[in-house]
Amino acid sequence: MSPVRRLRPAAAALAVLALTVAVAGCSSTGGRRAEEARAKASAAAGGAVTTPRWKVAMVTHAGAGDAFWDTVRKGAEQAAAKDNITFLYSNDAQTQNQVQLVQAAIDQKVDGLLVTLAKGDAMADVLGKAKAAGIPVITVNSGQEYSARFGALTHIGQDEATAGQAAGTELSRRGRGNVLCVIHEQGNVGQEQRCSGARSTAGGAFQVMYVDGVNMPDARAAISAKLQADPAIDTVLTLSGPMAATGLQAIQDARRPVELDTFDLGTQVVAGLKAGTVGFAVDQQPYLQGYQGVDLLWLYRFNLNMLGGGRPVATGPQILTKENADALAEYVARGTR
Image (cartoon, rainbow, N blue to C red; front, side, top):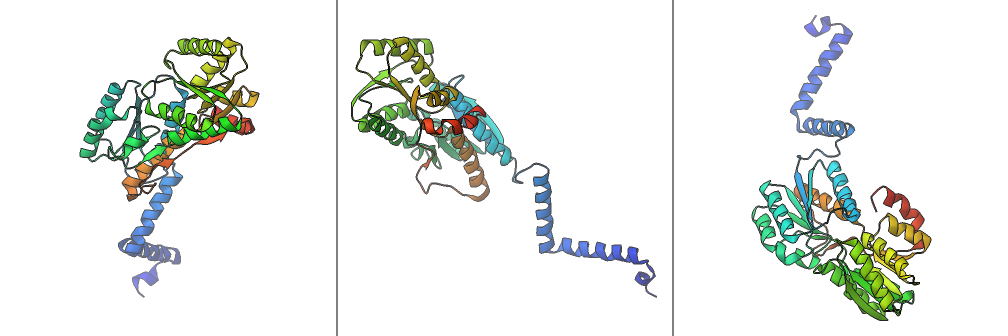
């Protein structure tokens, strides 16, 4: 009797199984199956992907305490967790400081870079350094017109002129005849484009006013004084959620029946939509800007993919009114809208 025949049935089965596994492990098919099994085990353990632990930095022009940028960041962080990416976030409202933060990310040899271009020309040199270092760059939120020129793969956000035109069309539809558009960051190209776009389609009288968005009490007083000095104004158009809240306070101070419309969302904007104190909001979906930015860099590193076909990836504009308020409240409360 051969050695195998002398084995008990259970032992023989184990020997055959061991031989089968050994042969499968030596074959290409078996290797793929083993790799797939490892990937499934990794996913079950909580890892969404098995790509290398790449590092992505996002550097924005956000000022301190701006909830809009908290939403952008949350989207980026959730995409990073899914994509096995170490995510680094930094921000500064001063352009020169933002340049230094981008340089710091380059020095850290990040695998990808997301950057805003609110004052684009100042970022040209440092983004040139990122390109020379082989770091893929995607611009988000602001600076669409600079993005391709500075070597970015694409831009993610809304076209601000288009968003302004959408706001102006809605103002015209609502019969608003004399609009005060409040710019809270002088020199911000995107804010200028929003007001210009709205002026082009609003149809009625249109004024632009500059205030200091860092000093909300002064901005509130300036808007209120303007409303008291010019009784023809029937609408205030603000360009951010926090400035919308300040605009509402200024209207209350002026004691006049003026409509407040705005760009961007926030808890107070959604509450205003629900109560009727805010007429409409133009949403650019900031969560999506952060999420798509990180996800596209992952796709580019992993598979050399890029959306847009050479054109920006649009996240807005979307006109939201009282009809949307109840549905929006849940998502705004959790910080994703």
